[in-house]
Amino acid sequence: MEIRTASPEDLDAVTDIAAIVDPPVDDADLDVSYYRHLLEHGRVVVAEASDIVIGYAATIGVDRSRHLSDLFLHQDARGQHIGRRLLDAVWETDAALAPRQAFSSVHPAAMPLYIRAGMTPLWPLLYLNGSAAALPPSRLDVQEIGLALAADHETQWLGWRRHEQYGYWMQRPGARIFGVRDAAGIVAVGGTARNRSMHSIGRLVCVDASLLPDALVAAASWAGDDVMVAVPGVSPAASTLVDAGWRIVGHDIYCASEPDLFDPMRVLPHPGLL
Ligand SMILES: CC(C)(COP(=O)(O)OP(=O)(O)OC[C@H]1O[C@@H](n2cnc3c(N)ncnc32)[C@H](O)[C@@H]1OP(=O)(O)O)[C@@H](O)C(=O)NCCC(=O)NCCS
Image 1 (cartoon, rainbow, N blue to C red):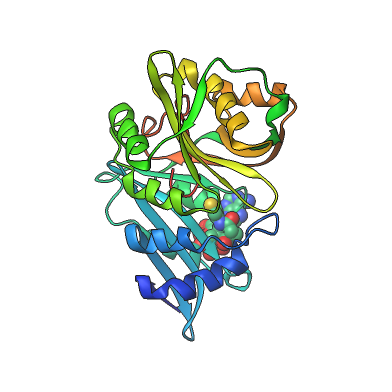
Image 2 (tube, protein in one colour):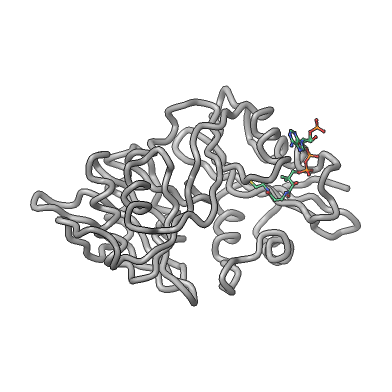
């Protein structure tokens, strides 16, 4: 078994194993553009046995940190410390030089690896699904905007340059990038996409934490009726959705090597790209 750095030529090998170990839910097609994005803009390492990829890990740079996008092993290869070796290989530098973040699955072998890699479990990321029609009214308006304008707002509000990630979000099926406005101008930006059965809000960033629940309600109503979104459990936006009868259909645990890399009160993250 060998661990090696992947290149864009490994797209087929990575998507072949991803389709087995992390298949899309709801009969959706595998999002090949996500893996292409990781291979072109992130760092991907693969575990290979007899020339067959049996697992992979990927990270992406977010500001001064590295975010763990994926860590997946074929069922038959688990429990042999290959996951630990993939994780060790996927960081480009020491945690002291580039702080680390990850959304840990609830798989019992995932969290110990992240804790040993210097990350502390901090809060749950709730996957919520529900009807936009059940939500309270919002006083904010939503309109489609260009990806550069959305990314520019994130740079202004968070200091992050996410133009490449907006490029990926724009390639997803049914993708629309939006701005949420009050009377003074744009107060939140984000993106929606859709698969065969529902819409999703893949990202939402607010200028001010107090506006996040209202911005989410406005964005969900604009996205479509049946909507999926990932919301930090510590955000008041989570109770807005749960109070409206939305269902928690799963959760991951946010882990980080520093406590303030990500603001869960102002940002609804994309789990793979943060
Ligand atoms: C998570 C995953 C990548 C881990 O890889 P792996 O090769 O199976 O794990 P490893 O053998 O490297 O190490 C797991 C460690 O967790 C430990 N562990 C397992 N269950 C545990 C538990 N309940 N409590 C504490 N530690 C536990 C193991 O003993 C091992 O530690 P050790 O080195 O002291 O023996 C792999 O199991 C996998 O692909 N799981 C399904 C997909 C998934 O959930 N991926 C994570 C996405 S965030």
